[in-house]
Length: 220
Length: 347
Image (cartoon, rainbow over all chains, first blue to last red; front, side, top):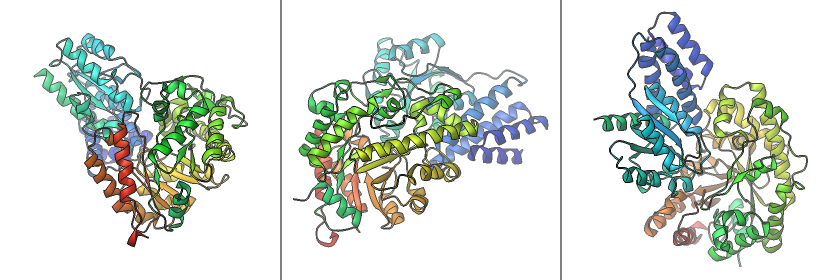
């Protein structure tokens, strides 16, 4: 198992999708349980990458992107082979703020969340604030995740600020938490407070962990 | 009287001037300056030129911009839909590459200078050159081949093609984007641009692993720049860090100016560049939205203290969000003029 984990981690760091998938295929062929593939290989690899980010910051967006995509792909494949269907940890609606057409960050986060057994409802790009809340209610989601690449779409009146206002008006603040992310928040780590979000994350893998924490908090 | 161009030339040569040159990227703010909506403002090159000249005069910094918005390059490549915001830069509203087949069909315009989408920027550049040519460097923004696909097909799809797509398709797109780059830089130079910001965020190691930077980004940077030369070209990664690759870029391309990230250590960057080019220290200008005047002064002083010794230093801004209060722009610039003064030992 140790060799599989090391080889998989290396493939992920090299952003080599084909090699990563080959390692997983071979592991399955050699009798490694699908549950172990997800919980002992795929998810820990995301954590190793997160550690790399926080310690050296020398992990590129491409590595995040691939790690998340491979994690989502492998998890989906493995879950279908689980002996017992895994419990869904919770649900998130995700999208970019109104006026924002940059979907890369959102896609990376979605991949990480799927590997963490969190259901993702992807609302796409340029999402109006009312829709974030309506969809969260419709799907019983515990978290709304808003991605913004530009300052004006992060701070604008139709972004997170409006989502917060609607949640408050409808008395949903205890039931639905809001997380934000994207370039403006990395440049100013206090900005999430200005837009009245509950949390932010510097990168997609950290976001997965923070969202899992928010879901737990709501479910308590 | 010393002009912005004098300051820039002196800094590039490591010679004496009154202060460190200051590049301030006020772009969409021009609309506010003229009391217009952003959409109206970008409809006419005369408006952009007038606002650029007015803002430079009002604040006293050292550069002028011929940039409208980044999506202008997508328009030059065939995009017909730009979405204008009321408080920020316009967005590309239609990705012209929706499938890999579209890459094969993509046609690079033969001549940028006569392209309808270039006429307003051209008008703007002509006015800037007429009014301030030789006194203040006129800047143009040209996107590198590794980064341009992001505004033609979206960041997400470009990342997918780059990492997992067919290499032949990727290379065909890069080839076309590099061809476009060479034509665009030529058009801007012919129109009188003195400084070319060579924007390559996607080719940086914040976006791709070091191995890919070495095997793909660097070779494509060479293919972009070797045929057209590096005169006036500034290496810029849109806020992505570059200290880790500075040595390689200098060795392979020998550009004149390196526009660091706010997250790069200025002193370290300057040490790596080692006098082989001009170092631009860049303020994290998103913080200007809510920093106090004291915080702004202290940050500018820290940056100048790190970059000024040994000269060959330029002070720059990044995206300058529209919502930064005017008094904070002034506070930053006043601090830059004060702490960037080249007196006594600095000279």
